[in-house]
Length: 162
Image 1 (cartoon, rainbow, N blue to C red):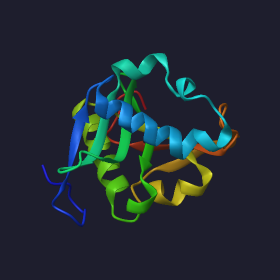
Image 2 (cartoon, helix red, strand yellow):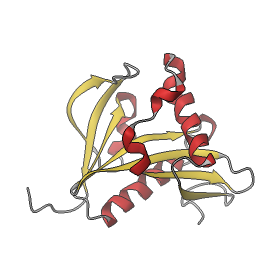
Image 3 (cartoon, rainbow, N blue to C red):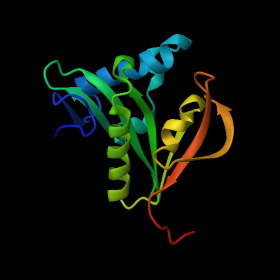
């Protein structure tokens, strides 16, 4: 499927399998942009939950290059969490992050999730606010990198527990 909002028909959005070559390419992108400058070992970026989570990429048709990545975890029956939304720097500003975010939110909604949460770098809160996410709580430092983050959430549907 062609990714909406991108500037090229040669890119598409795809769910990838944990452990696949595409997954490893996406992990390398995550590492390069989030962890490498902090001298964190590559192996440290993985957690126990990753195997059960949904992994979505935007990939080029010809070179099979990962341009953007996002991960969705089911925290509970009412809550999903987005992790590691990342876009190759040279492709930022082309709505790839928006496309991944919308795809993950759609999956969460299809699952009947009432609340979608994420931990955003403080410098990126404006991006998420455009999609209806609101900051909650206090700014905190990432346990791995020390980069300031804040929890953000978006209500997807009415929850009878409110």
